[in-house]
Amino acid sequence: MFQTLTPPPGDPILKVMTLYREDPRTAKVDLGLGVYKDAQGNTPVMRAVKAAERRLVETQETKTYTTLSGDPAFRAAMAGLVLGDSVPAARLAGSAATGGTAAVRLGLDLVAKAHPHATIWISQPTWPNHFALTKAAGLSFKTYRYYDAENGVVDRAGMWADLAGAQAGDVVLVHGCCHNPTGADLNAEDWAQLADFCAETGVLPFVDIAYQGFGDGLDADAAGVRMLAARVERMIVAASTSKNFGLYRERTGCCLVIAPEGERATVQGNLEVLNRQAISFPPDHGARVVTMILEDPALRADWEAELTEMRDRMNRLRRLLAEALRDASGSDRFGYLADQRGMFSLLGGDDAQIERLREEYGVYVVGGGRLNMAGLTEESIPMVARGIAAIL
Ligand code: LMR
Image (cartoon, rainbow, N blue to C red):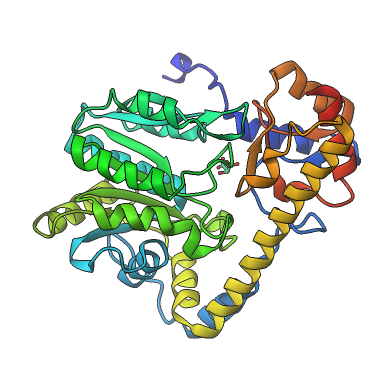
């Protein structure tokens, strides 16, 4: 039976995580995996999460199953967080999911059920798992140009030229904010254009929002997805709480589907059947913690305050790295780092250069030169900048 299996190629991001862990040197900097770290290099449990977990231990009376789509209160709280009041509840279906990854997968499985021949249009570059999830859902994909590496901004001309090939029933997958891996985001005009494009062509928008609150703020980061939600008939949103609540290992995400009122119940039923066939009931611990935080004004205020500290730290590190690179390289060619948003930016570089950065400077970045700003510290920035300037 298993003799027919071949070793899998491995995920490029997780590979970096393993290499870093196996490196015995102490002078090494992990800018690979997308995990927030504080100035001491720790990824602490957020204060509000700790408080909510304590309260949950005290007050939870049962661990019996919730529903096939999770706790409805979690869905409502996540819809409020991500979509604000852009869509009436009567048009909103959805389900808790085992992390943002499974929320994307659930959305893709729904597409595969509704429209098996849909082509998923994926930004080039993107989070590599978008390709893997699309294939696993049995769907085909095409890519659209997204990034103008020379100027560190969205390649708008390339994107619209490529998306002109999309047809009714296709899906365009976009990042809600803090584009992974480029840090270059769509602006308000782009979102408006996307809404018009979807309305005119019948292409379904699918927004993956995994970093809400890491760019410019919870509302600012969701402005695009909310505008789109208010203007299109149908749409899928996959939201993660791994980063903004620091719930990585709890696997707490949410798939939201906007549909006309008359389709909502059928969409909801199909999401639940998909869950039943894969996991039966979504996990609940993280979802309940998130719900408690979002519904309790004091917990919510503390969570937002801590999230703001995290965001400010990442944006400050961006500026410091851009300045250090200007000094180390004697040029402004890395100036775009300060303007981009979220956890990641792309430095470019081929595999040999990325390996040299690792071997010679102990600086770990993902292939293509994606670096996680939160992995930097004020102490490590000079060495990182020297390495980047020397090799890239
Ligand atoms: C990342 O892009 O590094 C994160 O989203 C972690 C992951 O699962 O790849």
